[in-house]
Image 1 (cartoon, rainbow, N blue to C red):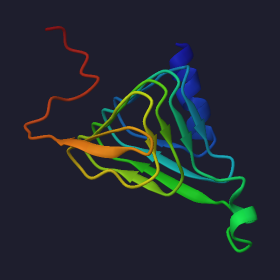
Image 2 (image 1 turned 120 degrees about the vertical axis):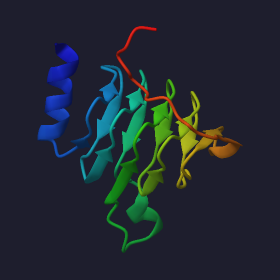
Image 3 (image 1 turned 90 degrees about the vertical axis):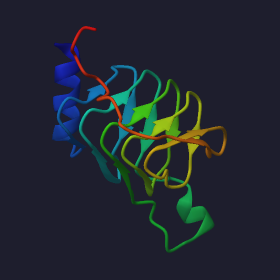
Length: 136
């Protein structure tokens, strides 16, 4: 019930969340100055931080007001304590490893890990649906 309320709060803040997506209560989706969209069947685990803006960007470039956008495709897994920075797109059926810092786009069907995150593996389908509530 609490997770349902949290996801509705995120929707109220402008986050687009697809069907059958689970966002841990310990995850932080920050849309202070930007947009976030999350596809269907995603799993976003505890400690994940999704940032759609950059507060220090103006110090680096006076014309950059820090607004950004994060797009997460369908069937994406974000591991514990991963950080996703602004202006990044994660392709369908991709995996972000625990603790990864995602600074660039993640192609579909890829596994990324590290700081900054780099592709460590390419996945081949067919892909099971993440967050499938069927008991096996």
